Image (tube, rainbow, N blue to C red; front, side, top):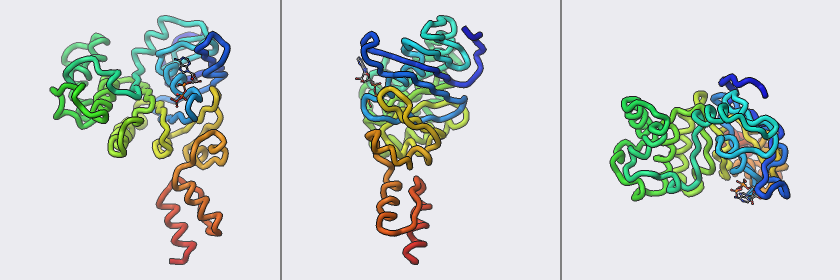
Length: 285
Ligand SMILES: Nc1ncnc2c1ncn2[C@@H]1O[C@H](COP(=O)(O)OP(=O)(O)OP(=O)(O)O)[C@@H](O)[C@H]1O
């Protein structure tokens, strides 16, 4: 087994396989995945393609059946065999946010909920207090610090869950469809928080929303437990093979294709302004 260094990349998976039924079917079937420190990666794929399973492996919540998992430069699994000390160390540096925020509520006061993770890490009270104040501020929930989280809206609860995850000052934040139950405003709020982490905290973000993937550094598309597409958002979200993976290209890309079919020379782009400029140029104002 490679020595544990504790340095990056945030995540490096090689030949990872995972089965829920003892190897009859594979939810993940030979996945290689790298996430650099500070990088924001979006995971896309049809229902059942393996996104949540992969997210849990990256978050050090579940173990692979086969393959090598390195997290924060620590070899946690080598050929499927665990290294308990490395795994425990990696876990302390990774946080996860799930789809249903109510599953993550553990107390009856917002500030206590955010403090829960740091308390489990054994931090001194002053450090915990500073982390709670900082993260409630980040998610614009400072006014509701004393509220009962079970009485908040789904969007507010998700912000509390994100604050709790970030309060532990993770090097890697894994989010499994955090916007699934949020309206547009709620999802924009999550996007703003993620933008603020750019370059400092690695983020692995499972989503069904193409617009969210557009702002990632890199996009990976899963198909039946394997990596089907990988690259920059421009490259992946404009790829014509997306439809064959049961994914719909973003609106601007579909619009550009429809205009091109009608004879306009416009690029299939994620950039609304660039598309608008091209249309204006083509129709001659
Ligand atoms: N707890 C479980 N027990 C048995 N099979 C499971 C379990 N969780 C997931 N699976 C199966 O593993 C495969 C991958 O599921 P996973 O939830 O990782 O996909 P996903 O891409 O996140 O799907 P979705 O977009 O629907 O959330 C699917 O075939 C699914 O049915």
